Amino acid sequence: MALNNSGKISLAGSTAGESIALELGKPATGMISMNDTDVRALAGITAGVIQLDDFYGKSSVSGFIARYYATNLGTQGTQLGQVFDNGDFTIFYFSGSTTGGISPIASTNIAMVNGQTGQIIWAKNYDNETADGTDSRNWRCQATRACKSDPDPDYFYVGTTYLRRHGGFWNDKPVVLKIKKSDGSVVPTPFWTGNYAINFSSDCFALDYDTATSKFYTSFGDSGDNERFGVLNSSCQFLRQITMPATSRDANVAIIKNGFVYLQGNIGATNTSSNRQGFLLKVNTSTETIAAQYTTPVGLTPAASISSNVSVDSNNNVYISGTNITSGYTGSAVAKLNSSFSQVWCKRPSDGASIGIGSMDSSDNAYCISGSNVLKIDPNGNILWSRGFTVNGVAALLYDVKISGDFMYVNIASNNPPFIAKLPIDGSKTGTYTVDGATFAYSVTSVSFVDQTLHSGAGTSIASSTANNFGGTVTPAVTTVNTYLGGITNV
Image 1 (cartoon, rainbow, N blue to C red):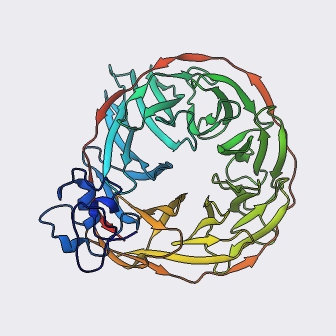
Image 2: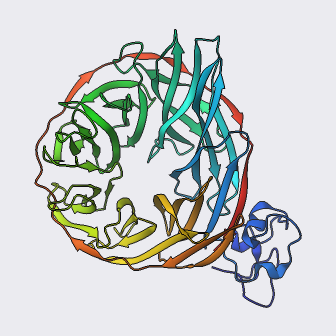
């Protein structure tokens, strides 16, 4: 639906194409004002006078390109979080602070954004810090990733870290924050010690929720060696850990779907050693046994690595990406595996650009990031379209692409802070736009694929150990962040 390109436009009324209220999904006879934030967003004018002809051709479902700032945070970066079913999405801000002579550390700052208008609903800082020179307690983002599904529709869940400094030593404890969608308030949640000594760091990296067993699966560990997978109950209490047979690094709970949790990571002594292996495990959530596995061979140079982003389609086919995972090519490639992890197809960009799997739509099309492009790939591995992004004439660095309904949400890094773009998944709305003083180009590009063959896989195993080691219940202080919309352009 879209408003008329000419002729009559009205704030209210029951005629499609004329009524701004109907275009925004509001009642035809309800209260509406030119100064409503969603009305201004539809016009593309955030301040000043709006005329009715500013709404010609505008659609509330077309999408937007926006930039978000956190003024009191000294923002170091912005990351797209979870996109919910109604199109609303979260943003994570990374910032630094110094307390009690302790070096700057990251703090957990999250904003909820209206997915229809791009306007910020709320923005909060989650912090609980005291200091006496050597001791402090604080919340921080540590590669924070939102849960991909939620057991309670009124809340969402974020894996982060309860940070403690005691007697000159860091002692980080993983925790899952349970946050109310409507206002950002939190429910007290437990942290767990993770079977580590008092001076050992332990961060919560990624998590997902299994509706069949009412359990969370999470990855945690010290950002280097000894990363683990954990099982939590629906109250976020730690039940047990799933242990890899060798040193596990870069561990991630990639996704849970249809009764299986997909665990991704690397095993090996160091990130660069030739005995390092990338692995992907498909684990039955009811029995916690391996249903399928793929592990790269030992001795590859450079060491192989499977990306933390993994997607699963409606037929339980699995889409992965990574570097040096194919025979005769050490760059990055994307592959489709069947439910037993046998190769269906494997592709790499012909220009040698990097490629990473992003997300899937309801028709089982995959969306990948390749350099400054987003690629839409059909189930047979054919590129349906390729779209490129530039900011001020320079190829943009793309962080992530997520799909919700008929739209893709793209996290685009260029300068600081980056852009968030909501664009139709049919590849339309290409053009050049001005956003927050920057020239933003979204254009048709040409990318082709070369067929590849995955390395033959090797085997591994897992073990489960009970560890009901709760460390207590924590509630962070929640304060409002001075966040504002730097600029938004409807497309």
